Length: 277
Image 1 (cartoon, helix red, strand yellow):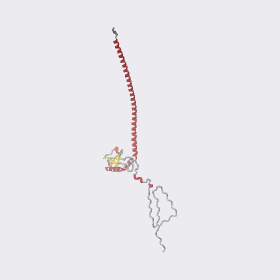
Image 2: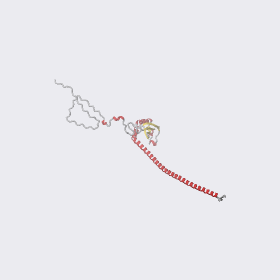
Image 3: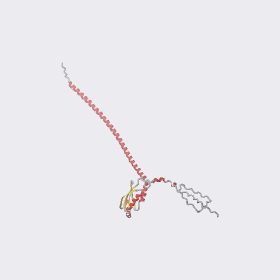
């Protein structure tokens, strides 16, 4: 006999499948949410760590910038000190040179020439002044060339020009008529290590090579003895004094005066005496 199931088993199976599907869907949703949370926490940690590293780097960069500023300040201070040291060394080296330079300026300026301005730029000295004629300037340039402390004189400007009240000082009509020309001459100063006419730029005396043979003490130089005078031939020798001669005074040490030579003894007469008759 055939058995027929009249219960709604298909609907029950369909509902079971639906429950399984929704359960699997819920588990997948929960798994996705958990996975998303894990990923979010991971990247949040990464971002936080990178932010901390960035903050640390920014702090170190700020420190390095401050150190760079301090280094730049020290470099500028060092440059200023080196420049000041160089200026002091140049002034120290040229201390005596300026004395000789001004002395040479006084000695080389001829009559009819007046200096109104001096300006030095490195080794170039610019001389400005007024003169009576062009020939005076030519003579002045020759004197500068032969002075030894200035060389290569170069005439930049010479023209007939009225004096400027603020630059050339108080002038009168007689001054203008006497010194009508304005001139400008540039000369080259010697270098610090260059000797000038037997004198270095620092003022020390240059000793020539052959001067080593000359004795340093002039008293030690040999002095030729005085030559004795001619011996007398006719006058008989004077009788020796009865009293003892005075003691010879002591000569100072290092004296260049040679001791006097002893008087020459008269030659003995070789003429035989005449006998009696």
